[in-house]
Image (cartoon, rainbow, N blue to C red; front, side, top):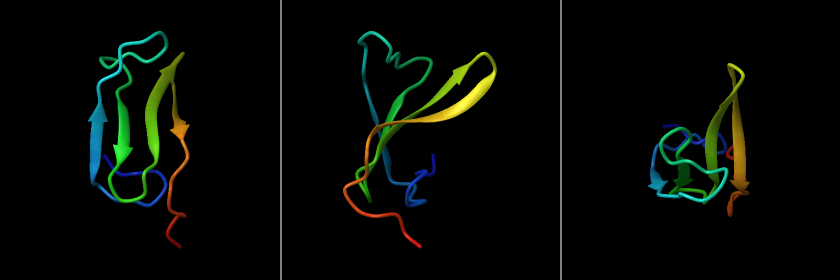
Length: 61
């Protein structure tokens, strides 16, 4: 999956099983290039990017 911050494809799945973070429905991803942690969330048919932790490096121009 492409990082919404820097566009890199070097992501890692993070296995989370706490309330609100279901690995089966909206797996959390971490970008290996910029450090952004996010998940793709679908609620009532609307897809959104949920940022869990901001990137360590700024967005590429």
